[in-house]
Amino acid sequence: MTMLTAIDPTTGTIVREVPAATPAEITAIIDRAQSAYVSWKDTPLAERAQVLQRVAAHLREHTEELAPLMTQEMGKPISEARGEVGKAAWAAEHYAQHAEDYLATEHIAADATASYVQYLPLGPVLGILPWNAPFWIAFRFCAPALMAGNTCVMKHDPHVPGCAAAIEDAFTAVGAPPGLFQAVQAATPDVEQMIRDPRIRAVSFTGSDRAGSAVASIAASEIKPAVLELGGSDPCVVLADADLEQAAKISALSRVTNAGQSCIAAKRVIVERSVHDEFVQLLTEQLGGLVMGDPREESTQVGPIARQELRENLHRQVQTSVEAGATCVLGGQMPEGDGYFYPVTLLTGVTPGMPACTEETFGPVAVVIAADDAEDALAIANDTPYGLGASIWTTTARGVEMAGRIEAGQVSVNGIVKTDPRLPSGGIKRSGYGRELGPHGIREFVNAQQVWVGPATT
Image 1 (cartoon, rainbow, N blue to C red):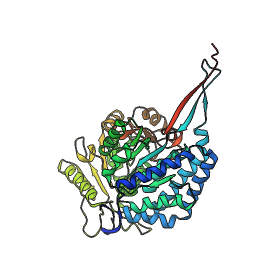
Image 2 (cartoon, helix red, strand yellow):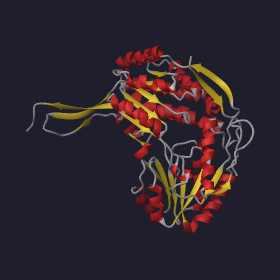
Image 3 (spheres, rainbow, N blue to C red):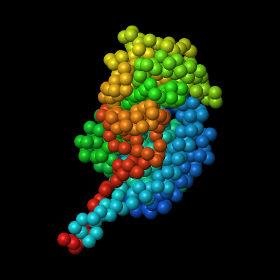
């Protein structure tokens, strides 16, 4: 029997083992999702909203039970974990409040007595989700899909089985219709069975570009729509006319939130050469003062890396970059002791071709690259196969002008790159396609049905 195993990255010990679903059990879960869809698709939006509001209230009321699951299974500092539960609740509340407007019928003049587009549900939707934000990404996936009238099957990362079960339990606890939202505790190879099941009508995937390519290929072979939110090598451009202190503060925060294990974290800080040294000093001060430790402690700002192999790969990226000529200003040493901790690290003198520049670094490693001027910084920013998020630090007018020239799905001018239920989020190039959140996200998994009503008027 295949087991899904959760290991506490703080201690390296097994904390939870769950048997993986069998093919028959997976089929039964999809059966229930299809049965629930038959009635849910005709449930008025107001009643759908009530279910989502009850789930959001449950999350908020049980934050102190739910947040520690993330800390235990993937090492998120407890203060961040509490915030994530609240943000997941916010996503549910947002779509409960705004789905009716987002899905409003659009009347478009044509040669008909009446012609319009209405947004109808598709059916059961499969979400294949990662470990790094177990609650937030689950609700980023399910809140819009459910409010659009679909049902949801969530295949969560096998390393966070406790989180997955708790999310399903939240729906059960508030009396949601059976089969509306289900977590399938499945091994990764069984994903293909789920995608190919004819009752699954669409797929949402968040994870690496390599895994996303595999998921997209299977979905395409079945002619099913997919939304992919994949990796990033997000640039943070700091120009000479920026508020350097604020840029350094926010760059440090972006780099170490969730121990740097975020797709939209600032991965490459590209600094105009005339202010490079001053900025590096400011960034060193910000990073050097951070507290790494047990994520259960309120004072901890940087917890462990989620898994041992992830830490080893991160260290390889740092070591290989230093061997290629980068300077290690902070950190860079594999710590001794229990757990999968990695120190906050700052690399300067990074150039194209080094792993810290060309690969996605998933950990608390800040990389500073010098640019000759704004145009050079822009060229370096776009010199990546990814295109998820980006930030620019300069005057407002200049930042707004440059935003349209950055190859990314999301750009922040003088602020941190973040996800927000009110605004669409997603990438281009190898960072994926489709959008989540905002009005755009809820329209990814709907049938935009055109209706023409005669007689013709011309």
